[in-house]
Image (cartoon, rainbow, N blue to C red; front, top):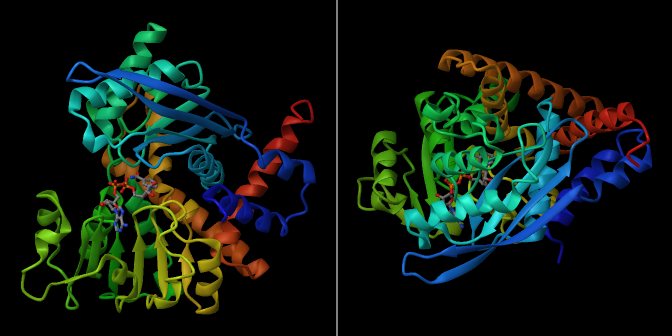
Length: 415
Ligand code: NAD
């Protein structure tokens, strides 16, 4: 069976067919620059010692120091880390950021750890990979299972190791420690900026119905932004189940229910019914937001989708086989490497602020993010039109053209 890495590489190879590239460039992109693994041994609260397998992959640094999140999840594995690092390489290139791509992870269920144990895992991760990361080498960030608290511990550990305060080594920190305003909802806001900018082209009208798979950080912010703009949120799910409100949820109640634990807390409210989690995809709506995990839409369920637009806030939520089915159904997909790139864009803003010793206002962050998202959405749409290809392939073509130009400019010494 094709792995997530195989699927990601396949998309890059397809995009390369639309460019006149030196085959050596694509050859280089088939392998990661550096893949490091370590066992993190932690003293647990009960006095026992446990070891957790951890990875850091720097995939490609042609455009600059590598950048990518750290995931704490029991299913973390080498293939997934490499695939996500390759996606980050493409995402940074699509956004024209001066970064290459990376990713890291620890095979652990963070919910099974106490807060002290989580801190020990986070600090041990940095001790294991301190020689790999650095503000000019590789800059981590949060991902699934990690958050600003994790980033604060990690920044502190790195600063202790190098003997100087180094906020630019990691992004997604609390604002009080040099985090950027606007980082919390940046991923959703970036996608929302594109939807607003392209609403007419996409045929979206005020009041359009939206279903959201994965009501976590990205999904909740997306619901809030879209509901405030007049869209109707009609179904949401998390790992515990899904709820459906054909007339639209009261967004305040929905967010409050999730903050108290899970979306299922909405069950029992007027006009709300519980549906099986996998039926969320088949709900009647115009927009389907995928904000959970990889491979959620596959050949077995793609045909049931009713939405005309899919927004990929998650990384790799649609398999290549499902892509083909959805293309035949004329469903437009706003691809992950563009749609969820608002997060890494504001991470870049954070890195710039840390290096300059500046603090930007929320309005400055929002304005710069909007400009960046609209500029690169226009560039992706232009390739899609010119070459008559999907937005996904167009996004990879744009990314690949920039990475290849950097490789070309760097010369042959590195090959
Ligand atoms: P999160 O952990 O806050 O949210 C994920 C949500 O998905 C949770 O509510 C979880 O319950 C739900 N979920 C898990 N399995 C599910 C299933 N089978 N069905 C329905 N829901 C399910 O994580 P997040 O930060 O919101 O990230 C979500 C996705 O977005 C990930 O793929 C991540 O890599 C991607 N992403 C996030 C950011 C960011 O800044 N947060 C940036 C870029 C990409």
